[in-house]
Length: 415
Image (cartoon, rainbow, N blue to C red; front, side, top):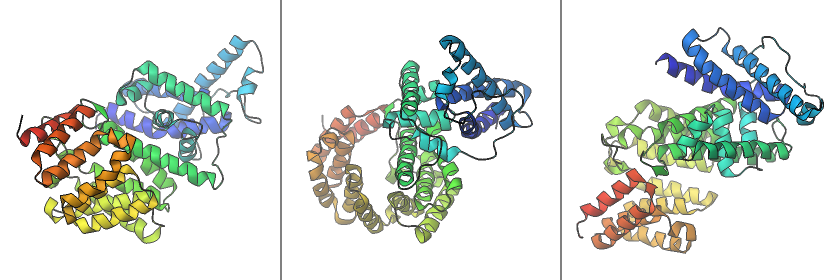
């Protein structure tokens, strides 16, 4: 791995620890987050040229603390009130960091930081952006590129998110039950969304964004290390590993999408599959069952089939039926329909799709059209399938998906 990549990886791993240490010590999350971002940028330049210091965490905390002190002094001068910083700082916290070299943090506050970034006062989009910036260590420009929005728009979103946390009076501490359980569900959902956006980009010319899938896996590993006995965290990590293992085989040399049934499974990442299967096997044996564990179990059934025709579809149907009990939703129904079609025939799958036409959101989704087209093709209804593939292609904003759907339609002939 080249020096620049090693430095970048190290900085992203250290980012939440440094920010957590500053917020715990000084309060005012928004100012600390800005200071840490400046320290990370300074390190990216200096460490590449001069090498990584003996204590990288201490270096970052020292630099970030000095930047924070500069910010607070500037704020005091601008407002011309000595109590300006006191208003920003929770009672009992220090007003400004003292100069001098700072020791590395004694504790890892990554989980607390994740919970803060997924505060219920924030919208899902803001939770995603703030998590990637504050916990992932990504710059605003990197996050903006990942979600195909202008950098200024993403900067405003992140700024509003930090302001919302401040207005909500959020404390940098683990919430008590039952709020902790509810907030953890939000954290897992945010990590799931980050992974999904990386695995299949919702728009643009690229099918996948490996930087986002890697980041989601890295952050989920961090949560798993902090909560090793949580079955749903283990299930989430297993699901990501088993799904990401297919990435090398999901597209051809020209970037065209290759569906699961047609992938060269020899190209799947065997090490990720082994780790994912071990994780989900252990979780299912010891932890209460949950939706992420079930999704990981389904992914494991796919991963363990040497050929597409060896897939244990009856077991997958049974697992999806269990998943439906945790909370039926249209996306689960789409997957159930495909699995049922593989067991009982395409007509049985098509019948399961019919109720989704009444769901306004799904009725406009390209995914419903794409699944229906696939089942119609299986049933030999090529004209109807071709029309659905084309409609799905018109509705998707992903160029690779659009090309794939148009190719499927063309393969069925007709004008």
